[in-house]
Image 1: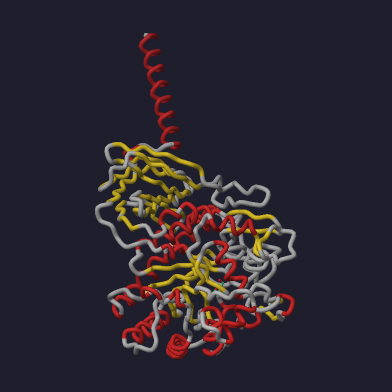
Image 2: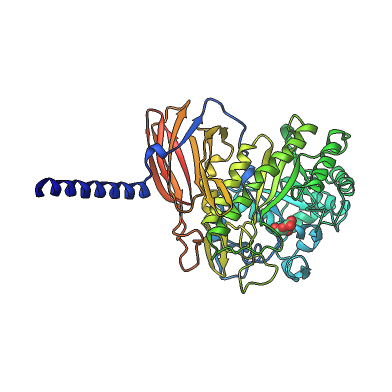
Length: 538
Ligand code: AHR
């Protein structure tokens, strides 16, 4: 019976074709019943996501300052008073809230007097931490403050506790901030700045448990109290309305009993402090590195390394929670901020670059690492009120890379730019079952998300898909908002190690995106290895 049999095979072919096309649709756009269910609850606002979580770190290290910021007054590279214009323009778009300077390890060997006065008269010194290169001191106090003004930021100075004295640090602050005609204030005026500078944040040392002098917690505590007592900010404008320079003590640099003891020692002393010393923050340093010396590649890596470095990044959650819990015990009012003033990915230096310069590329994986870290900080916004990515330009997980007159923006830069609306916005809880992304022995949450409401009432949602091959469908219930539209940007890349280069600077660059909102439900698909930030508007 040929006809029915023909019918049957036509039917079979049709079913196969339909199934095949369904398979294709699924790959491009996962079906909604697979969607990750998210609830964004704007009726339960949380803490303010302090804009200082988006702080930067600029150390005298490699090409971070020299070339990255400072090209000098005689450079053919377009500049304003020696500070390159392209870099300033790019940083302005990030609304950088604060810049930590001059280090890092460099800070505990920095003597500020060598970096003031006529450029030609400044001494050449050495930078023993970072390649033993000559430090020309041509970028000093006034140049840093000029840079801060040009990008519209705040200064976060690290004073030298390791090899300096309380007197040297106190005099630096008097030089910077005194409005009265003291000898130091007159010297500042003679060097071109009669008005006192505003120093918003002061770091009392840096990693004094290691490169800052190998101190025990107890020894550092004594030093910190002495410096906290004598290093004063005299700027009258900063004493108004109870505002003042905030002081940040050195905190832990990892997890384990040694670091717990460090946090306990400082916080116990804080609880029982006398009126004559104070602190407003405790730092935490944590890099995505796996182990030192850093050996993982910043470009040209495989999926095993992709997954490993993302899983390392997520350890930040445990560190922050653990230290926040210790701090809660001694400071239940959460007066002292946890300041994660060094974080980011630390890879093997790029082949052919100067040893000690910590030059590395920056891939879409770094964009994900940035989003995951910021999301962790935002979820702990009641305690984590400041953070500084290491480092701003040409060093470690940088925003910007330069090559002589050329400049490019990294995937990490794009995440910081996309997250600008989260600065000072109010945290909004997001509940979801993240699903999993697994590779080898590593299993990670597939999706990560945070939300916040800005001062104008707009709700912002950030979604990250860690899975490098599978798109993620998301179906989000929006509670407490009348949003009917969603638009924003998405950042993804062709490969897990895609980077921007001077020849191809836009390989990893955000694209505009819109998504559907209907009856209080947002539906969208996240590209593999992507970060999306959306504004939800009525
Ligand atoms: O960011 C590079 C270095 O890492 C800093 O100088 C130091 O504080 C940390 O160990």
